[in-house]
Image (cartoon, rainbow, N blue to C red; front, side, top):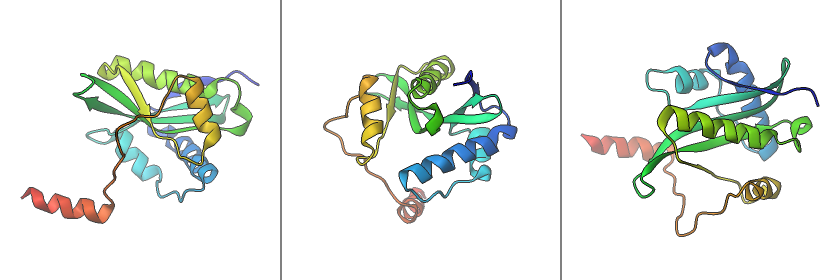
Length: 162
């Protein structure tokens, strides 16, 4: 495999590559992909960025992406990093690239917002991904249930702030 370099997405010129990787991740998982370059531009370069990203490149060829965000836990007494998306191209798998992308996100989060821990979610049907994370030392969080509020509920909730 050719030399792989990691680079932080710090210019909108990289957004089409990031979008490509995230679309390929959605396809791999069987998810409908609703994001686009405009969403990524707002998230990464808006007035209040909500996400950061890293690309793994073999020359001009995309080999992987990581999309991550700051989080804070008063229980843990520290900031952390939540990796919402991690994708490695089939030709890049088995060479430590996923680990490098996670390590890069952890290193930058530790530098930028003093993160001390990392979390992510893995689909139950994604057994190979789960095995990968377990080899890195990840374990399931017990005693908690991830709960989500859909767009309609979110809009309704916002109405109660007045």
